Length: 512
Image: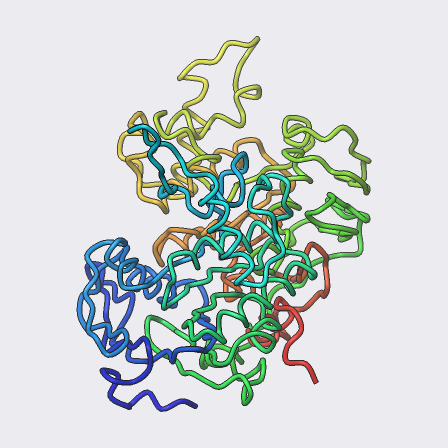
């Protein structure tokens, strides 16, 4: 392990000393003290809620720390805005690309600071200088690209490379790479890594954020892990194993195994069956059976294809190949309306934009999915809707006050209950729960899980997805592990611990 007790005011190119961040009573980051040496690639790992995003936002000047100090090149810095961090030599390459597809590579690199020339007192863009400067930069970075080529003609991998070239045009001392390979093919990843190695040789301090374990061993020099807002440890990658990193991420809970739960009868016909379901570029050859009263968890990391799979089953996105049966009946011509009528409900991961209509009352949001059922002869009335609204408010313990107030006035947990209640009013036989606990407090999360368990006990079959692997282990009766769009394992949550599940979700660990 690295010595973090050394005086960070003089160590390395980037150093943190007792940096903290609180939001009310919540401690997002606690006394983080660590150094990141120049000319090395430092992995930054941690599960959701670990404080990783908070640390990155503080370094990028997006968020001000509640305490502590940041030292760059031996000089203490204080950031009030992203521009301050930028002027200190910190550049971030986000997961989402910020390029303009219709513009050339050169224009994207110097967007917002195009070189100018004056002819007869009239200023215009100096295109010759722009492309000369861009070509010089690309060549200097070992990239064989034409600066005049439109970005729209590039693969996603080369677009990511151009994004980094754009960052390097600012001559950064510290480069933050946030999930840079999440949408890249293997060949494109290799191109990106070659560029990262070149930057490392130049002495750039690189902080590399990823969920892909194999990338750590291939490109990173160290791995720093945050857990519950605190530094869990840092290890040299030459000394690391996949297990040692996972244990730092999860601590004592890494080896906890869920106690035995109720038995699921899988002797009869499956309520939902998939055979070799494929959507090109998203997932491939997915097959499984879901039984009455069963909660089937799908575990996977960012980009695994879990949400894409559920959307295609529900008919929101196309399915290119494969077979789906609901209650033993072959389904064709998938549309959300058809799947809903067949008995499928879907609570989406983005409740604010997809699951609810924020300006409408709670009353209306509880009825949106079942209007055809509630209406008589095409006529819908408040009186006809009221029993459906009252039942879900009572059964799900929704704290709504006046149901005629906008649903946006409710807490996150109660909004999530409204999404669930809306679909329960359709009386589904199968329900998809995509990130049902996202953005809710601990108490609301527990209530939502109890709702899912209670509905399953009454016979509802459920597909459960959460990026929090602890939740998948806690809630599901059986777990499918999805990676890179394919089902790679099936596990029993009563026989599996968090370390094993996380390792399965990641790509292969340290090479032999």
